[in-house]
Image (cartoon, rainbow, N blue to C red; front, side, top):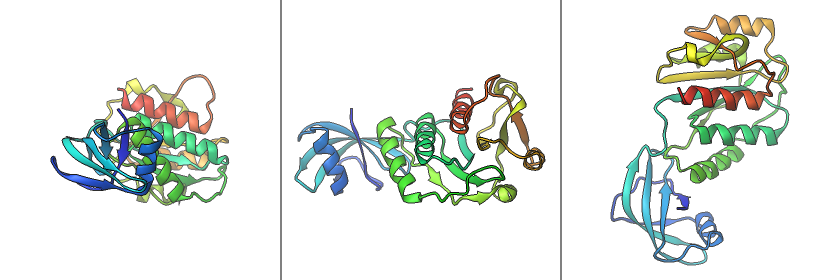
Length: 229
């Protein structure tokens, strides 16, 4: 069943109006009056609804059922990812991590990362399209890019896992409910950065295998391993 997006809290029996973009999406999907579709509000709920009417620019749905936290994992995962030079690879990384279940993202400026600007509006649009595709109830959060030296001020109460060839398997750890994953750039972290990260409270090194991975692949692999233990 197809899924559209509406940023509202809705009640069973309520008729809601979706915006022009979602109406265009419905037409592209060749939906018709009477069809059942899912709606995600990105703030905690997925809804089963019936399409009651739509025109060129509007679409109206009746809410039939509500599913709180639908598609959400039992862990809250915050991915800290060093900036990648190629924006298509950033998009791919974000899309796949959201599908897997990552809930929050912070990009890092590091010694060996490319100092590029991240467009939050583009990432938000990518995230909305992804939660519609995979039917998640929560829209992930995107934070401003930070210098890695400031990571200790935002790491909070997370258990921290850093991708490193000298680490242990994820299976060696008893993962808690709030997890921070830290992935370096293509050139890796500098020795000073690794030392600083290892000194973070509740920080552990995780080995992802004996092959060298691209930065986006490492982020995706860490997310899969973390959210499936």
